[in-house]
Length: 295
Image: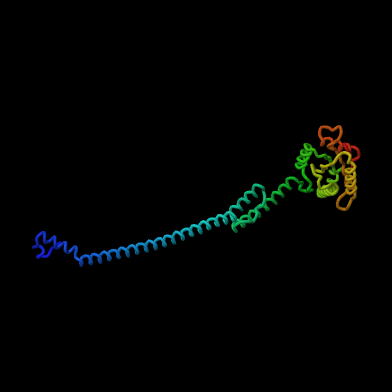
């Protein structure tokens, strides 16, 4: 600090005295007090402003934190809603579809629009395939001309009943003199005779019985739940069929049936039920035809 020239001329003692006077002077004290008050006031204002700024910062932070919490809650709710919707519209239908495939059933039409369209398309194809398979099975199991079960079906059924516990009767049938009638009237008339025989046999026997065509003019019937003590019912049915066939009309000539029967509960059974029924049939054919013989 530079002193005035006149003060520089003062001695060290005079300088000290002058400094003490300045320091302890009332004007200095008043000035210092005023300065201290001003400084204190400035500090208070500064502290107040700092406190206000902190409060505003806290308020802003609290608002931001609250908004963040709300946003997170909304996001969680949205995610849960999306999960529920996805599960209902996609996951659950796919689970049902998989179950339907495993069980060989049509799809339930549920879920999202795209999956419903998919299910409808699948169900349409499934039904078409099912119908096609049904027709293929029917063609494989039935005789094309008479619609009776064919030889392959007969052998499967006979094997099944031979190894089962259900009592049954095996009925073997030949159309008498069919070759002669066929040669005389033609194959078309012969085919009509076979169709007529099939229709009469199906009409005479129950729906649970199996009417089969096992050869040209050879038929077989597996009559289920049948025991030897009820053989009279078979005699009555065959007699009624022969009466129908014996009536000649202008389109189809009269024919008759030779029939051999063997029961699963028969006594003195031979090598097989088929051979025993065939023996009974052969006896009828050798003894005038147009009749029914039991093994």
